[in-house]
Amino acid sequence: SSYGSAFICAINSLCFSVCVMSSVNSRDVFPQIALRPEVKEYLHNVYTNKELVAELGQEEAERVFESLLSCLSHPPSLTCLRASTHVYSLQDVQCRLEQHLAQQQLSSCYGDSVPSPILRHPLLPDVLLLPVSGPRDVSVLNSEVIVGAQCGSAVLRGAHVFAPGVLSAPKYMKAGDAVSVFSDVEGKCTRGAKEFQGKKVFLGNGVCAMDRAEIFCAEGPVRGVAIRMVEALYKSPSFDGVMPNEVFLQNLPSVVVGHVLGPRPGERILDMCAAPGGKTTHIAALMGNQGVVVALEKIKSKVEKIIQNAQTLQLDCIKAYCYNSIRAVSSDLTQESDTDAPPFQEESFDRILLDAPCSGLGQRPNMAINWSLKEVCSYPPLQRKLFTTAVRLLKKGGVLVYSTCTVTLAENEEQVAWALKTFPCLTLDPQEPHLGSQGMLGAALSHDQRRLLQRFRPELAWGGASDGDSSENLLLKASADTIGFFIAKFIKR
Image (cartoon, rainbow, N blue to C red; front, side):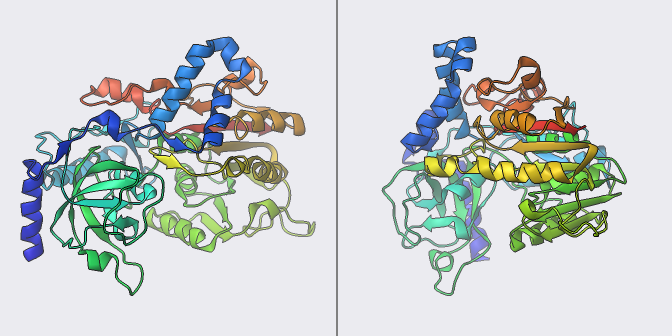
């Protein structure tokens, strides 16, 4: 087809760096995450609190904070895949994935003779890791496409550009054109623009799969890949639709959560804020698909996504409901205690996961967060309402795991301090596996209490660009260079 030949020509021009305007310096490409001044000051106060400064000293506390701002705008150095080990052996999944990536390598233009190795995590029996290399030395082309910040973050983790993510494209852009892709850091680009002069970050080069007119058609939103990334700044395989029954793309700390919860076959488990279902399906898989996993989510479209993921991963012990978890305790004392549908009687679950709604400040890569301080600080009251419900629904002797993907004290260690004070029936329990750091200073928790918490702190391992690391170094990095994340495990006595 004419598009096919244009695509090949465009790839060749990219591979041999034709149409070069300038070469990009990696430091210019990745500035620190952009935050509103009041949010930056708030986070600065968290990372330079009195307890921390007394232990580290002011200079080291400031250095760690600067590292946090830098690492948040970069992707982790490994992509984590959770294998469906309830159906297939890890070895078989790894073998099939190697074959798939070898095929993907042949059709890419990176020119690497050897595909990236697929590594097994030494402490997580259902995890495969793929090294991400970058930032790479990629040249900027004349033709520029601007994408939204969320789309940009996905591109930095190996995704192609889908049509809804495109904000601006050249006036005469056609399928087959080679283009440079930039992320709109501050959310100021108008959809449908022909050019953009605002703050933008270079993500790499790609080849258009659609004309401009198709992307911005008047009939409504268009789906599908608009630009295939062929020379990305961060080299990471694309997993869109790859072996969907066998692997699930998931951040490493999110996989750790399932193992810490420790589900067993035949148990009754509640996932209170379950969308999109990554942790729900992991819990079900760890139970060998035996027992009941109740998944609650208050947005209907998200419930459908949980059901879809459960079906794809061949897990039928998951019961998903559109329901507000805060109201999940039944006031009807005559109701049966083992009903799967909410609301539920008190003390009716063996284990509960509360992966709470949070400010999400640990997510990576993230070029900019435009939230106000009021929005960032709005989560703790909601988290406490959900936590109170969780304690009521948990059986005596049961396990409650609380987790977030944020870096504040108010949503993490301070919530633990509040919980231990408010619910004398709860005690902290050791976590297995414990791959992260201990809890952070600043919430007046004892050393022994902080030791029982698990906080993933990528800023502590941050060293800038990484390329060509050995497998041994990468495995050491796997548990350190992650998203920012927090886990607490409680037992109800």
